[in-house]
Length: 188
Image (cartoon, rainbow, N blue to C red; front, side):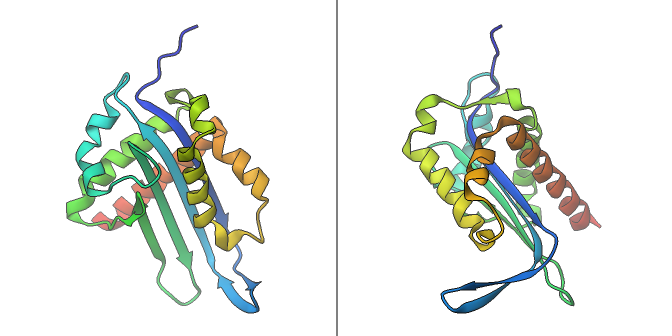
């Protein structure tokens, strides 16, 4: 059977939902880790099949990739500190992406991209990617984003999770759901 991929390759992802706040001790200092959610997905675009790279051409100029050529690194961070307003941020290729009228088309394209990645057959991992510098950068972005949870997670499991197609699809689903919820809040 010949599977035709749709313009996506070399994906990594992970997400963590921290339901209980806790304190961690690092270098003799105590840090508070609030209740929250962190989601991160990296995917490389190309124009095989669908024209994903072409669709993101202008966005990648505004938000240049840090992992490697033609990559979209999209992340969401949320913190819920008791007695305070929910604090959340989106990042695209390491730069903050605010929810505002100007960025609505970007969120629309990202939501469509996440919908596509929800299908584990929509992307593939090149063997050269798994052994190369871009993969190392993608794993580093994951480790950096989730360093506050280092006492709560198994690093080996998180790395395995990062490459599992069904988990990447699940992360894309969570990210799309988050975008939709925040867009609804924005318009209300």
